[in-house]
Image 1: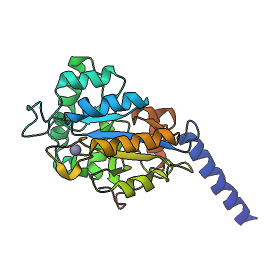
Image 2 (image 1 turned 90 degrees about the horizontal axis):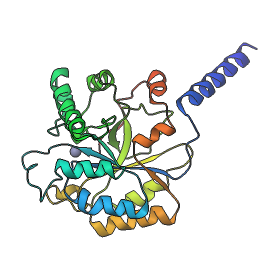
Image 3 (image 1 turned 30 degrees about the vertical axis):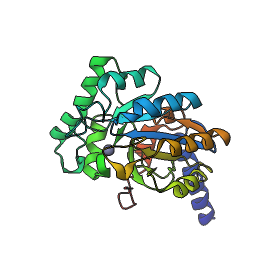
Length: 262
Ligand SMILES: [Zn+2]
């Protein structure tokens, strides 16, 4: 009898917690596209192609040193504003692409607030989500994000996001490059049974950081595949329709031992 009650209680707890984290069932074939570092090709190549397919996406912007001012390499703020106007999400990747695991709270806030203030001055929706530059993070970083009331933060890890297991500040993703088409294609199969596939992309192409280059033809292949196979492709912000991040933060403790970089 006692065992029965323990089992019943456990089942109830699991069910109750899950129903609170999820606002609605995660559909199969749900993919989140995220683009980091604000290279110029995200405006000239990525945004028009996404529009062609009717896909959503998140752009984690920063002023990447030392060449941010070179508009042949990086988007300017007018172009970032245009992404916002097109309905894409503009989110925070710090001002200087800082390794935030090495920053004090004051320094971290200054990095975040520079981007927030830029957005505010241009009428861009307030950034709610964050991506760790270079996947640098620690337990303190998570506390700082919480104090700043960020909703989600994207890491690496090359596995699918399970909103019932992964803390909202440790959302795993796969990163694309010119060589890993096979891995990315097989990752898409994992968008099922309550799990979401989050992809991290950089420039399409990426001139300054060729190790994270995604050739435009390969990018089109991915979009065509997602479209042909009826995937739903959204921004990180749009995950709030499915996931109550505050509930999840109250229930799931962050597991920093898992692989969190790509
Ligand atoms: Zn980055």
